[in-house]
Length: 102
Image (cartoon, rainbow, N blue to C red; front, side, top):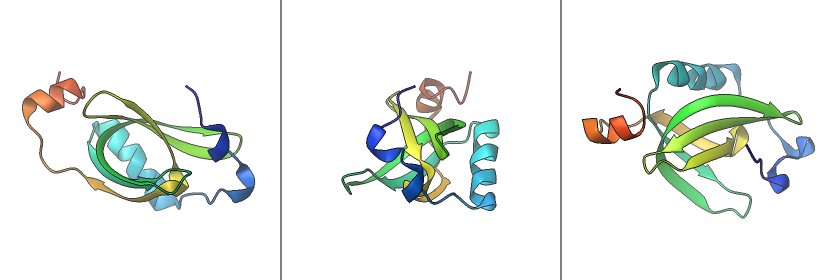
């Protein structure tokens, strides 16, 4: 896993609250696809469906590791995620590609 160097500074990191962190943990356990909106370090805002895989901490900063529906890996700093909610129902074929349905 490669974390973006520009986003890994602990001095500007704002930890996620416990309820949000627990929602991510439950989504990981349930393999539940989420609709996520986040901004990158240049300020570009993204809206994407992704399946969360794990939560990681590096240098005091928490990250959500996820995979989008095209299979691209995402490493999102938790304080850059503006909102997350369960994704709308997807086709069984898309769910299989994302690893939700065996």
